[in-house]
Image (cartoon, rainbow, N blue to C red; front, side, top):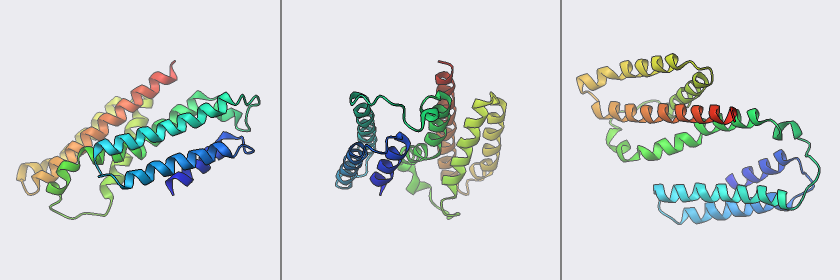
Length: 198
């Protein structure tokens, strides 16, 4: 499924609709990587290797377009020639989806220990996505004081749990994830702004 989506989007956004073999190659490489991953244990090393192989496959496909000497600009010229669109798009996409997976894997060692109470299903995931979305937007707008307000508000909401000890482990787990999430979003925003100024 994932390989099919990546191949279809690659073909669609390339604008070279008459070239079918490069998207097909993307599909084969991504599918092969996903299949191999299913036979390996779910560790951070396997996850990182999987992501690196996906990026290499995408880079290899882009290289094939260049070495084939395709002279004309595709139908999506405005998309490819706008650095701002790519930087903003990738920054928001990275903090919304892949970043959540990375944070979940970084905090997985505490997840089982911290889950002593039930809450809304996937609520933490969507809260984290909204937090990173707001933080990245604040960085782009140079509103760092608003980020401090978010940190303070989140800490106050969990201070009672830590002080009373009713679910200290759960509160600490959430705060660790929050700090990683905030730092990742801020760093992504800083890198994106640096790229925009180049």
